[in-house]
Amino acid sequence: MPKNDPSDREPPSGDPAGQPGDSTGYEPPFEFDEPSPSRAHATADDLAEAGARPPRPPPRASSRRVLVVAGVVLVVAAALLGYRSYHRRKVLAEGTAIAEAALRLDTAAGYRKAADTLEPLARLDPREAASMRAFALAMLASDYRESDLGGEAEALIAAPGRAEKVPAYADLAAAALFLGRGAVGDAATYAGRAGDTPWSGALLARLALMAGNPEAAAEPLRRSLGADPRLAASLAMQGDLARRVHHDVQAARANYAAALASSRTHPRATYGLAKLALSSQIPINEAVSPLRALFNDTQATPRNERARAALHLAALELRAGDRAAANATLDAVEGLDGRARAWAELASLIAATDRNGYRAVKGPPPLFVTASDDDPLEAPAVDPTPPPPAPKATPRPTARPGRKAPPPPVKKSPARKPPARKTP
Image 1 (cartoon, rainbow, N blue to C red):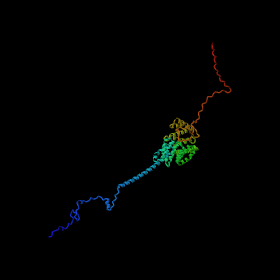
Image 2 (tube, rainbow, N blue to C red):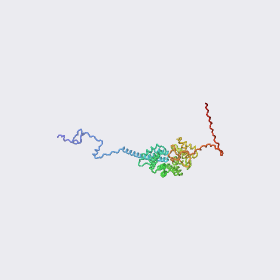
Image 3 (cartoon, helix red, strand yellow):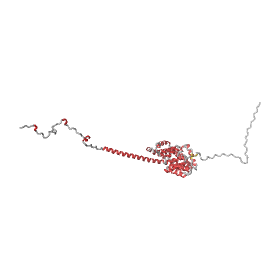
Image 4 (cartoon, rainbow, N blue to C red):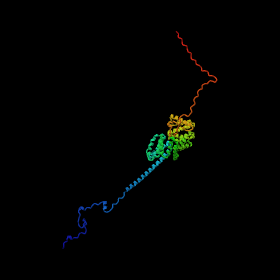
């Protein structure tokens, strides 16, 4: 029998376990048999090699929230800025309206209220509001003896006065400061620069009367009252012009009454009515009531204005024959020393005695000096009452007619004694 050749055996039908499936029968070395570590995520380079684009990362919700919050903040900030600007304009408009109404009174109380109202507004608006406050302070310094306020007024108009377009109230403030110093020319220059404002006309008319040129006051007053028919300063000046220059009693009376209707304690209008009454041109009672209102205004009216009102009131009381009331009125004047009291008694007596017209008495003490009563000083401060008659001398006895007066007795000289004889 033929022997079985091992090479003639059929190969196994399947690969034995643990051997690779190739037909070569090659077994790799042990070191190459471990699998390579797998990557958790494919990199961009891997995707690029594969021809794929990397996906875009999804938008973050926090970024959207930041954008929304930022937009809301911007909207709120813009709204706040807009409201702040609106509120600022509203505060300025309301404050300046209150201040202008107080200025129109043309009194110490009115100027003081305007200055106080404009004090915080001047910081918000260092141009218009500051200039208006400067004008109020300048009038207090010029007309009402608060000279310490003049420096503050100058400081407030320093910057607006250098602007390309100077505010009208800055020029008016400068005019008022020059008016208080008696510099009529400079005051008129700045008042003219203020333009066609009611206050410009009032100041120019006043300066014309001060300069002795009353004819030049008519046109500024016409423009002033055309712009503001109820401005007390212009109405009172119109009354002075009618009384002192044109001698028009009815026009003066009407203008003084209109000024007092706008400003109840206006000094110039009150004094004007008193002078018409002292000139026997209107009834006394028509002037007494405004004088009493001004004299009793102890809280707001300066002492010198009240003293001047007391002087006119005492003169009218003397005119009415009430000497006790006149003395009581002068007794109520604050700060009246002996010299001022003597002058006031004499001045009120002169005004009460002269019925043909009002003449301001010369030599007033400082207590009775006021810018609101600037009539020319004409009447000398002399006592108008006639001197008392001289006592009658005792008549000497006279001799009867037809008989010669006996000769005066001749006094005999004493007889001289003969000299004594000398005995030897």
